[in-house]
Length: 93
Image (cartoon, rainbow, N blue to C red):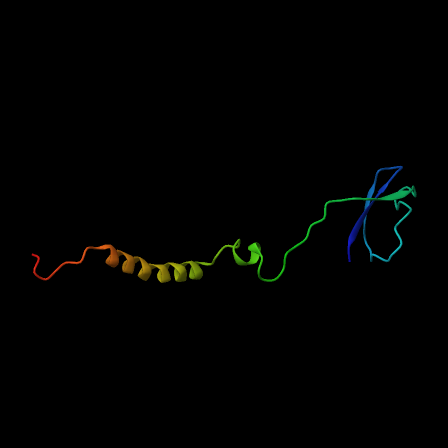
């Protein structure tokens, strides 16, 4: 259910209400019984599931995951280092 915010015209009190979209808007302030009007407020949302930066790339890894990444990268480094060294012939001393 969405959260709606209303502001009283008389006392400037802001009231939050969990309402269905089909519910009638609030009209009376619970503090001073003055008139309420709906206000536009900042809304927040949370991205759930996979495929988002937060779930797939933005999170922190555990130590086990970091160690697994390092161990899988080490053989690649040694292969690259071996490939970049000039080959030595058996005749060379």
